[in-house]
Image 1 (cartoon, rainbow, N blue to C red):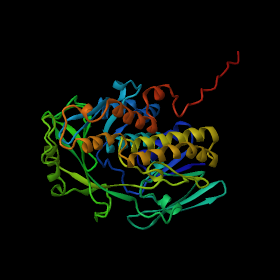
Image 2: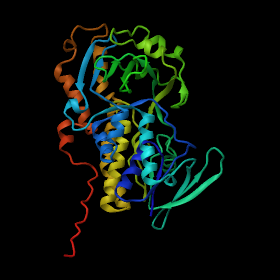
Image 3: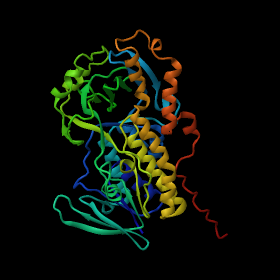
Image 4: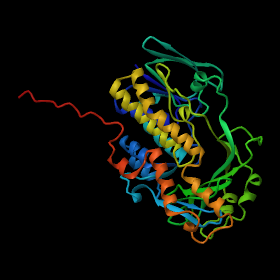
Length: 429
């Protein structure tokens, strides 16, 4: 029978491709009428890139994304705090990619249609109800645009890859309520601008109250010599402040955040210029959910943001969804389309992602910027006058350990999904 996947985002499509890789039939159900390349830039870390390469996507990723060379932290004055190599420059066997989220989703979608067939990627299918049946689960869908029934499908397993507003999680945890807002607002956009630093650098500047992140997501310049620069401006308000509900596609109002960044001209980067010259920017309150103590309910389980929505700190949201998908696939390869497989997946992934959710609430590796702000709010000459080299290294290394992408450990680790060797066919002679 077929594995049912609710959600056609990065996690759901990676799971579909992974199950197809091991010969397990599956079908993806997406709520929206059309999967469009929406969103802004994201980073995919080496441990997740490795898994996408295992799915045969290296050339498409390399053609569309920027190989991130380094990550650098700066104070609100543009003074360097900490930098570290990333991807192959850091010694990983696999690159780190900065890429438009919509481009990555399009790569996954087009590959899924090619390999699974368009009939197995269904849009306008919003999950409305599900129940266990003999041998699996029965799921009912509606077209949210028309309100009409969109059909009933039976499967061996139902995987919730339907995001932070997961319909499946809402039914499993009906009293949970909306995502938790901590008072932080993100404004995000993509601006055609000049390259900065190495041309492949991801930077973070500021501190916990006011922060700016940016990195290039195009490999080659346009006709005017400009590159697409993805940026995120962040402000921490009082958590009691009444803000609008989170929505990835709400247009931003520059008057609400540009004034805070007007003086952030670092010589090597013009922050207000990036914001002002952006044709379309978007606003999004920063939210997550408290970790739950159970993902798997019989033949139903959660993955990605449906399971462990986390702050976009440390570039881990999409990467962790990809790791979820590959772990589910490995356990189905080992245990079949069974509840045992889902329980084994949860036993590995839930503790790991719970630690990451909680660490991201403490700003993950970005806490170095806040420490500098607290110790030297008026600036410094050399960062080691403020933070010791050991403190800097410990913070960076601890995050890699929790997130599962320490260089030596990852390079030595076998792929999550190890395909069995083909059978040996002996000749009759």
